[in-house]
Length: 226
Image 1: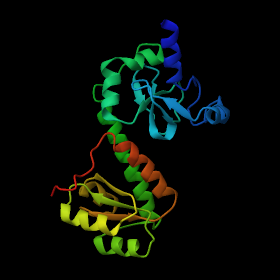
Image 2 (image 1 turned 90 degrees about the vertical axis):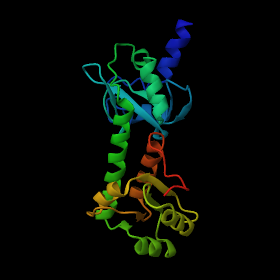
Image 3 (image 1 turned 60 degrees about the horizontal axis):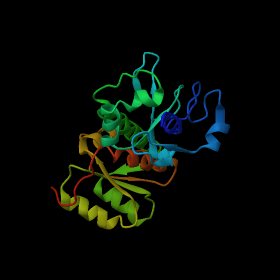
């Protein structure tokens, strides 16, 4: 039994004691190419690394989210869900996977959500500055009709009828409803923003990857709420 548990723990980590899982450390890109998938230490599910969350232990032994998957140390991988992070905390699975004592903040899931929100809004901000994102109903509508939109972002606390109209216009496009109007407004230098469109490209792809992770920590708006 002990051997089986050790194998499971090893499979749930990237084994890179000195390098990050993105190949930036001494073990480099070869290891990354050979093993693009990781196993969640809670669910046992094996998924591509881009769909999971990496954690490492700091020199002091504290569990730290490594959302960029570049920090040195043995990576510990979890499915991108709030309940999974909370289960790992409650069952002390970080220490078992790391094979050493681990200090886990009680608010670890909240910290992950905050970091993911920041990464998403950073990507949106870069798109705005590059002229690849617009806000406002008419501007977003025009981008959709001209087929220049790769993704639509709707404020989750906006009125349901307005969000419904935009979803109808954006048929066939991914529609993200994970951010408050104030959060979106901050990106565009205004108090609030309700409707946002992003042009095709790497920043839109990045945002969609990050929001897929964030969806496991923050609920989308419900279609029937105002």
